[in-house]
Amino acid sequence: MKKLFKMNSSVTIDEFTSIRITGPYSLLKLGPDYAAIRSGDHVIEATGEELIVETLSEEIAVFSFESISHMTIKEIRDGQDAYDS
Image: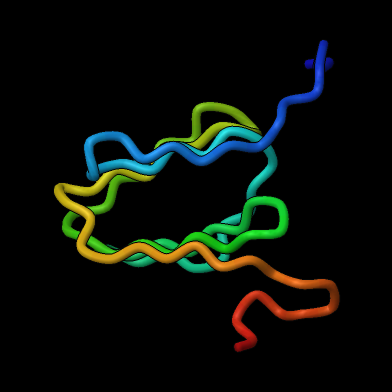
């Protein structure tokens, strides 16, 4: 399917239970209660209870938890690995 327009990246937190990524993203780590996602120059890490991942399209995903217990967003600088300090 051809894209008609370029989507800007965005991250939305809904009711402290889900994280919606719109735009290009890549999944870095995934477990039963955690996810690490890269979107643009940022890495989003979240942990919680009962993770469910829905990929709605190539550029839209929803990561839903029963509840999110911890979340961080870290900017990645040029040449830096996603998990460098």
